[in-house]
Amino acid sequence: MKYNQLGKSELKVSQICLGTMTMGVQNDKEQSHEIMDYAFNNGVNFFDTAEQYPSPSSKELYGTTEKIIGEWVTKTKNRKDIVLATKISGPGVPWIRGGGLQYDILNIKKAVEDSLTRLNTNYIDLYQLHWPERFFQNFAFDDNIKLTENYNKLESILRIFQDLIKEGKIRYIGLSNDDLSGLKAYVELINKNSFPEITSIQNRYNLLFRNYKPELFEFCKTNKISFLGYSPLAFGTLSGKHINKTEFKSRLKLYPNYFNRYSGVKSKKSIIKYSKISKLNNLKLLDVSLSYCLQKPFLTSLIIGSTSVSQLKEIINSLNVELDKKILAEIDSIHLENPNPTNYKEFKLLNYFKNALKLLIEGKFLDIYTKSVKFIKSIIN
Image (cartoon, rainbow, N blue to C red):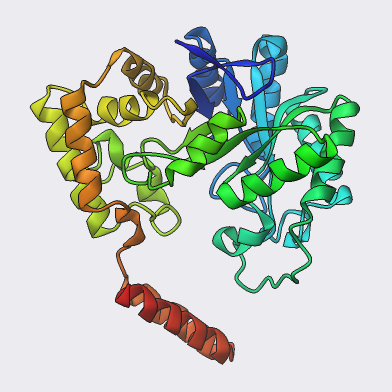
């Protein structure tokens, strides 16, 4: 296990970070603790969670994952030996503080206090905005939530975090699911006002979705902002286990409509091609998928989830795999054929008509029109 500096912070984090979004729904407390034990005993010192976990988030269970981690931290007494990261939810989740705009002083302070309580800790090492308020529609659980344009108050957000850092409740701050324009806006304000630095940005990165402009990585390097990549196995589709059929207890099987971002025909075609490369080189698709990401110089840590110790063992063993130039070139040639196969998702006609009928019964004619236009545009594009 290698360790990298997290941004400009004093923290060194393992190149593998344990993601915890399944803990509390696919894994009970005991199973989750076993997974965290194995991770920690094999060099993982970086653990990432969020207040809305487990995922899919729900009114009944949100916050459960943080509680499970908190009990593990108390039981193992290893708080000083780990780097603990969590996230405040953005708008669009009705069961979290009403679902409206979240990044104001009252909501941020409440979110921090609640996470501290659930995690059984006095401080959070890395506190992240789960998604930008301006992108709330991409993450909203309730399409009926309407927000005013009264967001993007970045200076106010930084000022709130500055106070929380002074109070010792959080150590460093990060972004998640943001883009270069958002990152630049924050850094510009930080440089003008001596606000706390943005330590990291956490975005998804895998063989199927990696079409970021080079400028993002160059900007991160110049400003010493760590890039954390999540979903490197694309909900397990890049593990090689779902090529012929979807495993019974996988997220794809349990929540097909929620975790459908990699379920399209084009994604499946790319996965089959990556699998062929793996077999021709006597490698597992899982090893190729993870090693490709880990060999990227801009990536500080790769956030992986696991629902079993055996699965986690397989993931950690992939650290011993290094892809040569020939394999890397073959991978990139597949990427050039279709830079973002995840844009295409399988369209399920029955679900479409069910949703349309529901809106019709509720008299939401404008919503029917809006969704129809959106769907037609997706077909054209």
